[in-house]
Amino acid sequence: MAFSKNGVAFLLMTTLFGVSLGTVYIVGDSTGWRVGTVDYNKWASTKKFNVGDVIVFKYDNKLHDVKQVTHQAFRSCNATSAAATYTTGFDSITIKSYGHFYFLCSFPGHCQAGQKVDIRVIPDSPGPSPSPPGSSPTAAPAPTKNTAHSLQSFKLWSSLITFAIFVTAEFAY
Ligand SMILES: [Cu+2]
Image 1 (cartoon, rainbow, N blue to C red):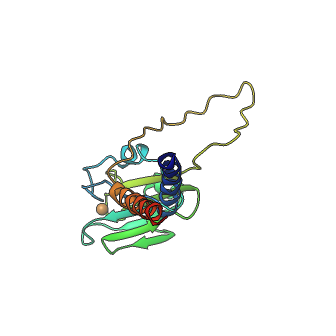
Image 2: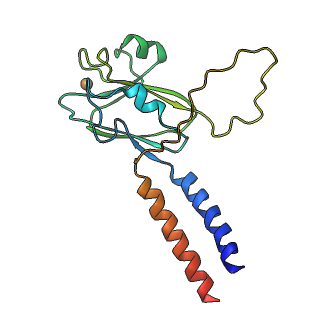
Image 3: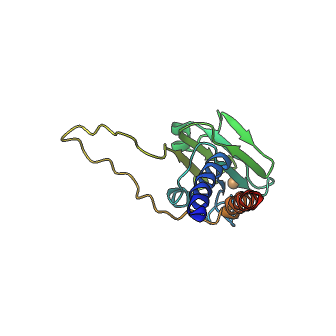
């Protein structure tokens, strides 16, 4: 009985921790932010971004940069009126709201060659989605649960600590 109680608490805490910590995504995973090597659209399509997650751009800042732009500028690879510019070579951007976040490299030709990424952040559960009869089915990309190796160990670690605390607390009685 004590175990199942612990189990429930463990799951609960893990969930809470998981939500509050968010996930860290390194754009392009081990390759990072480069030109001509990673299909960033494909990369992003395998992820389920949430508010609180952290997007990390890792790159050689002599060769690349990161600019946040509008959808239109993203499509045309126009970096002249960027909303934000990052140039450290290791830029962490925390997602603070839902929506699309468009990033590109402003070095000549890089965006055109595919160094651009659309970070799409949508709520976890669609909720009571009002789908009017006869409406065209929304072509939502299949949420492939490929949660990547993007610092998953971080989450695991916090879960283990939580579990340890619970075990300790149980023994204290
Ligand atoms: Cu570049």
